[in-house]
Length: 611
Image (cartoon, rainbow, N blue to C red; front, side, top):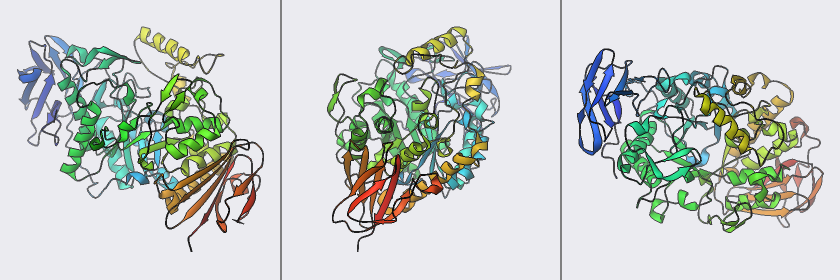
């Protein structure tokens, strides 16, 4: 279905340029629908397809209101603001009132994205959008070009990862609400930073979910790991599809968000002739035609199915990029991490080489953990369509104790892992704090009010760790200390090895941005040699302007690595083993054909330019 009006939000309560409040709510089974604000109750008129509408001067921005469905008082399912939380009234908010100053801003080219994932509540002491604004100069100095904000849709209480949101249009009140997010994005653009927002269209959180009392938002045809599946292909699905397409358009159009990262799209069930994900990408393309601005859609998907990132014209869903967990898994096992749970399918250094070459590790091979042949080929797909990382919120927070790499790997190995990400032909992503080897964990936390739900979450977390941890107890997600323990410690930036790591990351990011061979995301311009016994990789990348030779040693011993024959002299660009990075011994500045001694757990990069 095509949405006729993509320039204005049409659902919920909106204010037009004349100051009138225009309301539209979908409640196909209702016999009467009222908007209640203060002492007023205003009737809505029933329209086709189960919509109810009104236009009034009696509701002003800043007022609170409820919808009464056949006498039952409920918050607006398309609410923009929940000032009193998920169980309170909705807040009337004027989306078009903000005075943007980013008219000259143009989205960064996707291939130039260097992404920094952060969680608003734990990124700073105060845990707000304003707190993020105060750290933007730091992120610019680090070399970041795009921040990725974990979900901000209204969730219960003030502590949550964000994936329990129950009002997809409402911006979390404790973070600063919709006005705070608009201000943050505006400031990001003034500093040259793109903004990616994480959104969740595969489920609705368990507490504060009033959707079913309005219409058929859910279907019993499918289940998800988080409860009832959203209705994208059952009776009434047209209006549910419209709801989420409008949500996408709102973030891009009204909040000036540059890209959306869609959570776990593999859990979205839809057997319609046109998949909802394809409809979303097509509407984003229509918005680009209207505004002239580029928007990117990034999928999180664990199916290794290239259809998600292939163009619609080639039978794909048209996403611009996707997260690649398999690169992370292969990298961790290569670094000496445990091979439990989903890591059991990865064999270390050879699989890491495979990931560099193919994006997916499994692209048509048999998976022992899944007990089936898994994945598709990625031929012809540019490297900028894959987002890779050595850490992210899931891979840290899904550990029982939430340990970061700083607690699991040596200082030298952390440097090597960072280098392995930055030299890839893919889009690199950092998780907040990794650049200074943050020791604080990132643990799972919630602030529900339903006691039975709180206990269910506790038991569920314990069950999740059966494959990884058999001893000890998971931190209580409801305990405020679990949240506070997950906050970044900014006082460490100038201290000892933390400062060394920060300077190391800055140098590495600068290298990525400056060197033509690393800026190049052409996956054809790479060769890889693997020595599984020595645990070394030799990676060569090139453009017409430059060749780079990357030597990676994942072993705990010095290893001899062979320089490719007939390639002439190489000049050193970067060396993680240099004393200035607290390394044991720098390698030679210039090398040619022969062998070179590579320090344990290190990465060395050489370059040469064509004559």
